[in-house]
Image (cartoon, rainbow, N blue to C red):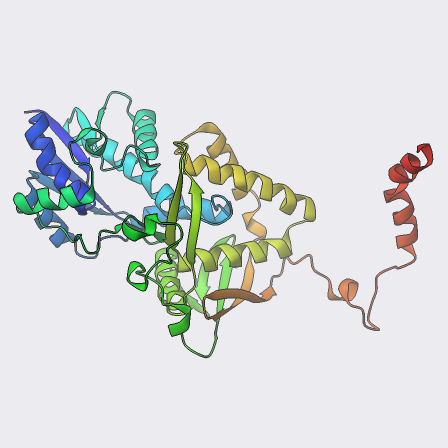
Length: 395
């Protein structure tokens, strides 16, 4: 019997897909779950896959690799799709594709499968990754071809075949979670006029229920890597998970946006990313202090392009890899401390400090300590405005 390796989350779609692949394709189904934050109980996941019909299940803790090789480059790039979304799901998919291809080779499988929809972005991220890494593998996408037209029908199928799932008709949210953030879709969230109910959120409190007093935290960076939280050394994974808890209590990192998907439609997306919001802001603030104006302004342009490449599933593309090297090249200077104020849904930078700082209080001050040469400004104004003065004369 031929084999298929299924990217398995344990959710409604992929749990139904295990049984469906066995029935429709007569394949031995091997499940692979990348443990990057979305599953707390690996044994429960294995049990659920087995009950659905899988012959074997790989559950691999890839959080360290995810943080080091996928989150960190995105942090250095200040990657936010359309200025908001920190790309949590988008940067998790190429990691899944990488190990899906590896396990397929190990198991001598002819096929890989995923639970992405035909109008979503994740199908692109998974499939382009697979084709880049191992173009010989055949790809099956059950949600693009199976007979179910709604999540309600999937729930009925799961119940009929005694497949354990958490989704219910009363709460049909589709949730994708990793340590960099959560994407929440489906149900009443599809109406862009409807305010997301509090039961849709997982990592953050409502701003109305956050502590009344603000909290101040200090994040220390070394060569672009966040290494200390409030003076305590943290691994990158621990840093992210700690900030998710702390900033989540203060309601930080909620995003509600109309997003332009790769397939050409607009979708309403709800995201939670407390740690991403804090670290992206902290790194950006520190970089603004230690890098010159031309670098900062140009980086904003290429950061937008980088975010598009990641969102569009081109993680392994030459341009994206070249941009990785560009962003990495300046990280030696991104060393110092940032103080963040957490208060009722907001994370605000209120302090910056670095031995590489280009900021000079003596040049910036308006006090008696001012050392700026004001007389030099007259000549600068003359030269800077010379082209426009010439244009005015010719009018």
